[in-house]
Amino acid sequence: MNTLIAASQRPCLAVAPMMDWTDRHCRYFHRLLAPSAWLYTEMVTTGALLHGDVQRHLAYAEREHPLALQLGGSVPEDLARCCRLAEEWGYDEVNLNVGCPSDRVQRGAFGACLMHEPELVRDCLGAMRAASAVPVSIKSRIGVDELDSWAQLENFYRIVAESGVQRVIVHARKAWLKGLSPKQNREIPDLNYQRVYRLKREFPLFEVIVNGGITAAESISGHLQHVDGVMIGRAAYQMPWMLTECEQLMADSAHSAEHDQPDRDQILEQMIAYAHAQQAQGVPIRHIGRHLLGLYHGQPGGKLWRRQMSECLQDHSAAPESWRRQTIQSDCPEYA
Ligand SMILES: Cc1cc2nc3c(=O)[nH]c(=O)nc-3n(C[C@H](O)[C@H](O)[C@H](O)COP(=O)(O)O)c2cc1C
Image 1: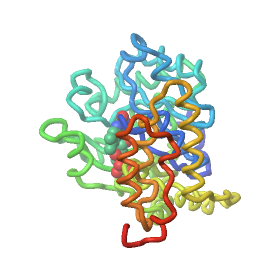
Image 2 (image 1 turned 45 degrees about the vertical axis):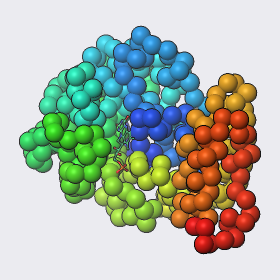
Image 3 (image 1 turned 120 degrees about the horizontal axis):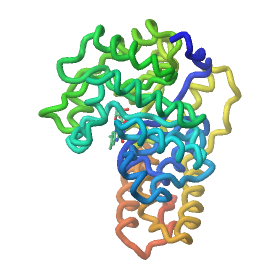
């Protein structure tokens, strides 16, 4: 622990890694909403990266920084090789997934089941840190199966700390490795934020980021009394405008300058321009538009816009301009 560098003072806002959701187009959109947030890729397995299409997995837009690559794996040498690739591609952080409970991931002996093997996690993180200059972080649960006491979490992180890792992201619920689907494992086990707060108290040199169940920007300040940052998953995807509010709150708590906040229509225009640029490179625009469906969530006309947007995405000949709202929608609350 003494080898760790003191955690930074600025609170961290992060958007969670989410398979099939936080691809590069989604991250580009989130970046427009939250200029300083840390963005995380979907989990990429070491196998996919070492034997697959590196460009497909690692390409991103410069604008996405600060950007973390999340890896799934448990072989230190493979993870180390992936960290070198991440460094070559200019990633700002590499994160090890110790929280995913899916059967596929368990068959690969990584993700949440690694909470049973703290020494292996330490060795993985140590090999990753030694492989490149890119900072390494971990994302875990507070426990798995019967291994869910404070003493067990404390033991896990005491061993993990020997790797020298500094940023620790904790999803504040345990995972059941058998019997629950990944979706159920995000909903059924109870949230226990106190556990995460205690981790920060007992390991003050960790930069602790709490994750799980954060659905309103207003709740962030409460978490920041106890930890160094918050990571938001589903709410950021489903109600993306929340990110602008979170960004503002984080700026206030760090006493930093306010960002000029664009409105939703301006963000949509920027995404239309982005869609054109991507289309010119052969990307189907529905791969981009699908991430925008929540943009007008809670706004007058928001539901109608979402429905029309969904229809536009089915129509392969529709241009990105068809994503624009008609003025009449926003003027007619009965359509909401
Ligand atoms: C569709 C989906 C995919 C996810 N994929 C990943 C993943 O690849 N890696 C990971 O660590 N967590 C993954 N998660 C979990 C989230 O990162 C996060 O820990 C979880 O959703 C709890 O945060 P929330 O309540 O803010 O959504 C995923 C969640 C969702 C909804």
